[in-house]
Length: 80
Image 1 (cartoon, one colour):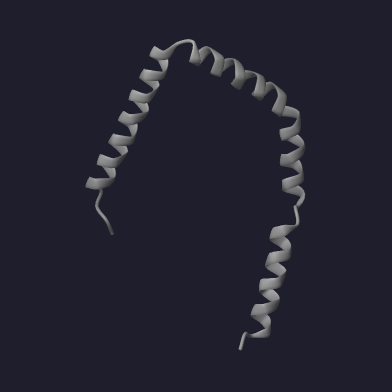
Image 2 (tube, rainbow, N blue to C red):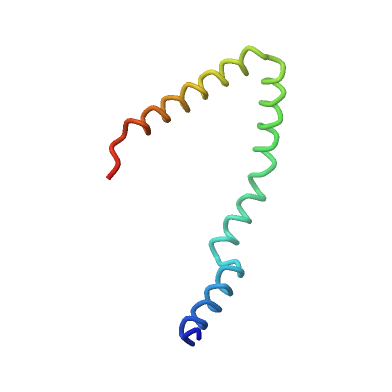
């Protein structure tokens, strides 16, 4: 049988998680104002990137190198 305190805690947690608080309202209001300039920049950057395939190749190589380096670091890291 579930303890009544745990059931009340669970119900309260679900209600608090579902309802947006003041922080979520602030984030949503700010994101609406910033959405247009970021979308314009992302679109123009994407267009510029598609017109230069050599840049895409180098971005892929650099990001691959970073992932390999992180994997090597993780492999040799001491586990506690």
